[in-house]
Image (cartoon, rainbow, N blue to C red):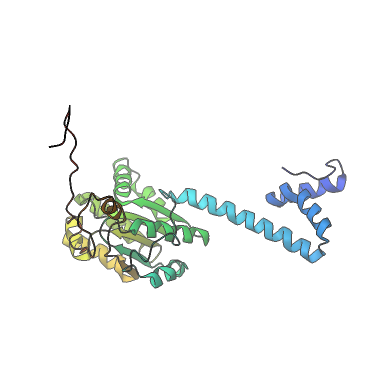
Length: 288
């Protein structure tokens, strides 16, 4: 930590005490360096004030964003800039850029991203979530499986109301991988309770490999699925990605996959390509 030239000087002591009391942590730690730079570059009073306030604001913003990222529990680092729109032309770049402004948060609107596995749904969800954190909003990321496990455990232990409140606090709740595994009936009811609590109060971002017409199978109850969809779709933005899986593209490049998984129908997301099995040499010798 940079200290002033003479920490025993009464004036400098008062300045440090005032900075501590005002919680201007960054300025307190860097004041000596700032004063030195101001003297060298002959800043005016206004330039000096502009510099110290801007640096303090930037430092606080950086700290707030770092804390927000930790609270969000993102599983990895992904960004909108890192998404390959050229590889996934079906992804509506204009809409994604609009969503990244965070305007949908102010109106409690939802975002639903549909598409087969591997097309970048989670990438976009995390990238959008990071943008929302940077704009000063609270975000929480979870998979559908982890969410339902947490709600089910809380219900068993008598703490369901508190757990629902916990998941309702963030301005944006991201639920990833909905539909990869079907819900048991009780889990479906728990999911409905969460969606109902957040309805028109907080935004949801859901990624799923199942089309809307298949949600009755996912939740095991057509009536319940309709009620959930009614609330999710009422104020929502929807994205449908129909391109090839990033992971399968790499396999195809290596020669393990013969057919290109282009234009996969989201209604049949589990329909996969032909995979060529690699032959391994038998013990003691040659391939046959």
